[in-house]
Length: 199
Image 1 (cartoon, rainbow, N blue to C red):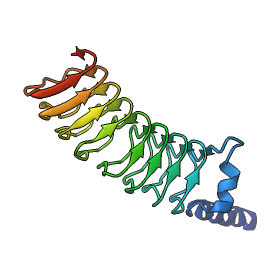
Image 2 (image 1 turned 90 degrees about the vertical axis):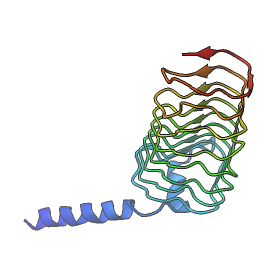
Image 3 (image 1 turned 45 degrees about the vertical axis):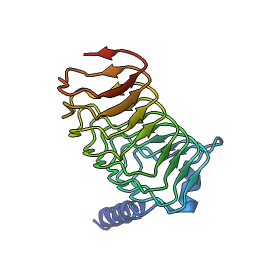
């Protein structure tokens, strides 16, 4: 009986400790030789402000709800199927940003991303004006009703399963537009399209 109680107490203590925010010392356990920080499926709930990651940051399937202030990722961000709800202005991501299935509701202005942005299956309802994406942009199966005025996508645009039925007056897509079954009733009067439209 005592042994069982001791085991239960130790289990609770370890669970409680693991649920604390990630500090710099614990972070060393999850860094590889290339500077990638892999926290996938780990029980951490927060990251320290001013965090700089030399490689990729993976917080997929974690309970982390907010990216820290001053975050600088020299690689890519994978926050797929996480509890992430908020990205701070000033966040820098040199590679792509995969937010698939996260709890994100809004993409604020002032975020630098060097590659594609995947917002598939998120709760995003708004994007900033003159939103500039250096790769593909996917808003598949989001509640998003409209794209921002002056949107520029260097890659392909995917909107299937979203609430989008009208496009802004001015829009640039250097790749293809994949409607994915969405019926668009209003097209831009000033559309720059490098590829084709696929229904």
